[in-house]
Image 1 (cartoon, rainbow, N blue to C red):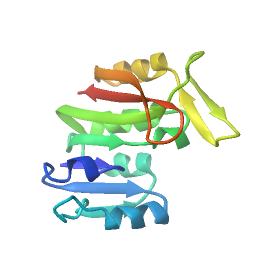
Image 2: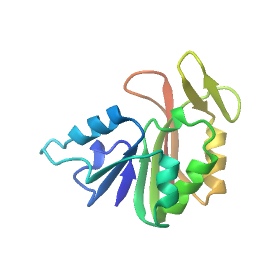
Image 3: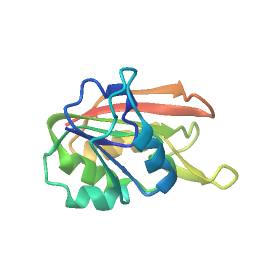
Length: 155
């Protein structure tokens, strides 16, 4: 069972997928997402803020949580990562991307792009504080735009 924003990469291996977003436009795109074989990406789509959705999710209910591009619009990730960790099954994976803050600590809002950027240490500290261990946290380049962190953490 998986809950996330970007389902296309694992359509064919997930038994069930739930997509969550506050944007009608993103939900419409998700509704049309299909695998190469034509299988729909999501079993259900929910219009909610991610932290609110996760607060109501049963504890230890997800094998995988993916947040592709979500952090960039949130800022302080303390409560969101806490809720993700609670919702994950033991041994579950949390996969995410986050815009990269190359200098400094914590996170910073950049008005010209309208996004938040995160330091590696901030992401690592949040994971540790919530019982998640780092599998991978590396710099990569998104399809368009700046460098991002690609993170995989395990419960």
